[in-house]
Image (cartoon, rainbow, N blue to C red; front, side):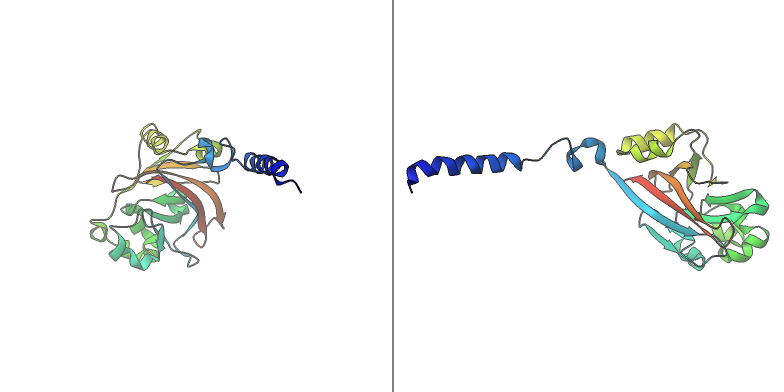
Length: 206
């Protein structure tokens, strides 16, 4: 074999190999439309209603943790969401702030014993919610930077300490007590009653 004649062929083959393995900057995680900038995404978050023990009833956004309702007194300065089904109060399928007063009323208070008196809620976190009319699931899925989340909240209309009568596909903007802005979309319900739970996907500013 003539090594001198073979060596250029080997170099050519190696060159072709490296060209063929080069990455495409417009695909996968190199595509800016598929990446997030300072956004934390929490998928399939399940929060139980007042008569359910399937999952936690109280949710801490920052820690992405759910707690049973009997932890309210020790977690009220950490939790941000409570899910309850309040058909008697016109709040079917509601995600509410930890200071929401209706949770002390009537039969609901029997489930949320930690809220039985207004004094029990003193010092509880206050979360503000805005149901975003016309904000689609596709728009939610496309949110990939913290500025878009902040814009959705500030432009979302009047804030309330609850987001009630939720249905699959609803998108809600929120601001927690520590100033974290976020969005969540409702993806599923396991029975729409007090023994069920809601499943949501959350996006927050990191």
